[in-house]
Amino acid sequence: MPMIEEHDRMEYVELMRRGQDAERVAQFSWIAGALVAAVTMSWSISARSPGLMIPVVFAIAIGFYGMLRGRQQVRAITSYIQEFYEGARGRWFTRVHRLQHQSSYRAAGDWLSVCLANAGVIVALMLAWMYAGAAPRGDLMAGIVTACGVIFGFHSISQTIGMSQTDWPAMWRRTSDEHARAERAA
Image 1 (tube, one colour):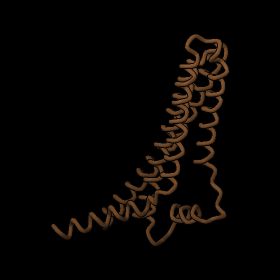
Image 2 (image 1 turned 120 degrees about the vertical axis):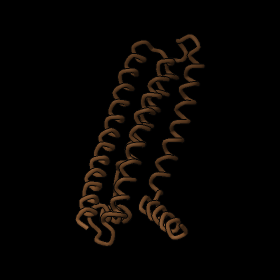
Image 3 (image 1 turned 60 degrees about the vertical axis):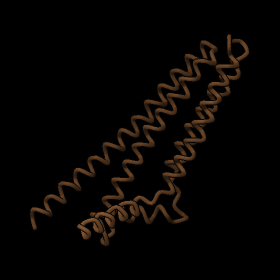
């Protein structure tokens, strides 16, 4: 049995490392997207160009979706650890999961990111329409910025709602139940 316990410990350590890497990449994506958006927005403001607001919206979206994907990976890893390593003992991740489902728990992480990203997009939309009159094809460019912004806003909110409603440990339980049934049938 020591071989199995050593294997479990090594897998646990590797999962924790993978979770830390995913969280780091998520933060880096978010920060990089925000910095690129800020630089591009400053160029657009100095040029008074609504067309340069399109890359602002795309930079915000790329940073947001990189962060969203990282958070999904972190939640999948933590729920796997919670389900298969912590079990009935209920250590850190199990207790955090229970805490997050209490009405008094106020986590600003996901929704704060959505609000910040959409606020940046709204600023880009307003500036695009402000500069639309003076630029050639300004109305077209401002319209494209608006369409991209509305699509991003809707999709960012729907993805965040979906992620917050997902019961990650239940997904792992369902997967392990299907695996056990397949082994019994074989």
